[in-house]
Amino acid sequence: MSTQVEYDKMNWLYNYLYKDMSTDEIKNLDFIKEHRELLTNYSKKESVLIDVACGNRVQATALAIQGYNTIATDISMEMIKLANEFSKKHNVKLDTYRKAWIELPNMYSNEFDIVFCTGNSLVHSPDFKSRNENLKALSSILNIDGTLVVETRNWEKIIKDNKKFTAYSKISYEGIDYVPLYHWNLNGMENESNVEIIFQEINKNGDVTLYESSLSFTPFSHDSLVDMMIDLGLEITKDTYDCNEDWYYIYGKKLNYKLECDNTNSK
Ligand SMILES: C[S@@+](CC[C@H](N)C(=O)[O-])C[C@H]1O[C@@H](n2cnc3c(N)ncnc32)[C@H](O)[C@@H]1O
Image (cartoon, rainbow, N blue to C red; front, side, top):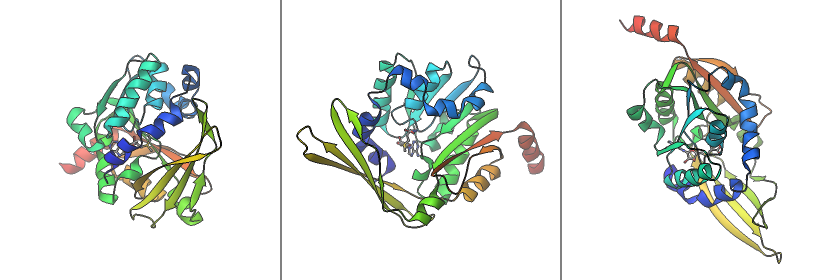
């Protein structure tokens, strides 16, 4: 099943996870706190940001609420529909497009000051080659001095721990409790793997209804991601990787002098 179809089928889960958030909660999203220093490097009036894996658009809405010109794209039409409802609810006007990463250079070139590919999205590239092509596409839509932000789970740790299950805290939506559970079917680094997502709905009378879906992904190492970003001409300006932490993100900045060097070398 393609990533697009998998995420189209996951729309209900994203709805449950985020629909109840208030505008104040979105203003104070951890995502904004985490990237505040980066954001302050770019002027709100002149910069244009893009969230290229917007999901139901929580992060893009948060950026727009902060006053940034933000565009949101995603490969899944169902996610884009949710995203539109979400930003409307929070009175934010955002342009959204159903686009795969590889299609973005047909729409844009050198236009964005920050390209966000966050929330463990890049891992849906099915292999090394497509990951490289996707990152190349994302890098090509960056302005000079723009920053590509890639956030991912720490696959070294996940594979080393060989965890079978991840249990998440209970969440409540419209008076009903839900307990999400992930069942990992790992297959080593650079091999296609999948996770079954089981959403347990605890009904008021105590009965449990199960909703199931699954996502495929291809894990990659921290070193291979860093090397790929450097090979694409990005300078790593921040890297939060820690072998004991579950997640990390990397900033890759597109520098003018690197492009000049590349052009000189190719003459
Ligand atoms: C794990 S979700 C993250 C969503 C959101 N960023 C968040 O943190 O909640 C991954 C998102 O990436 C999108 N995606 C996966 N592969 C893609 C591709 N090749 N092009 C564009 N979007 C893609 C999926 O449709 C999904 O919405």
